[in-house]
Amino acid sequence: MSVPARLYKYQPFGAQTLENLKERNLWFSAAARFNDPYDCALTIFKTELGQDDLRAAFDYLASATGERESLSARFMVNGQFTDEFRRVVIGGSKNAIEDRARVQLHERGVACLTATNTDLLMWAHYADGHRGFCLEFDCAWEPFSTARQVRYTNDFPRLSPGPIWMDGGGEQLDALILTKADCWRYEQEWRLFHKVYSHLGDVRHRAQAVEYHISQHLEALGERLQSLGLALS
Image 1 (cartoon, helix red, strand yellow):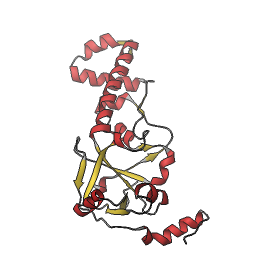
Image 2 (cartoon, helix red, strand yellow):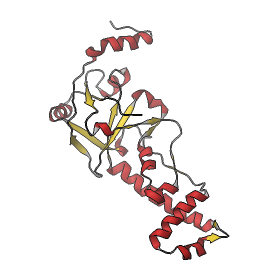
Image 3 (cartoon, one colour):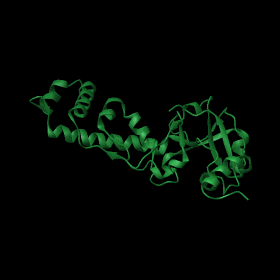
């Protein structure tokens, strides 16, 4: 799915948020600090390895060491990889995934945005009980044009060792940070990754930032309340 034309961020009124608005700063946080303890926290490793997984690991090791013949003699019997090689791959892959997941969760800056500015629950949770404001970002500008959509599911990603050995498993590890439990689907979340690792904190942006009060959305909110059997007074 392409990035929406506009993305939004709910904010409470406060000295820091108003300073960020004035200076056009956007906060990038470590994923490990997100308020949902299950967000990005589960790493499920695939241990049922097929021949393709083992072949990818073998080719990587052979290329890295230049010892294809000796590796074949040690880890292959009648053209099949041995159980010993399977254990080596599983152990090495788990260690590599844990190291790279730690970097993703603790050292990669992430900013959380949403595709909607009229959600009552988010106004309550993130904008100080409807007393805050909501920033609107023009996604024609970077970094907003690079936003990634969050996937909602109750089946968490299973990391396979093949891509870890072949290319570092970047897409798999991105999936770890872009997957949330289905109960959060209403948030319609998109995330920005800072392109510089270990950069957490404020990043200046060029996008438009427009203040929205809840009174500006009475019509949309009225329709939402009406669908819930309620009404604005």
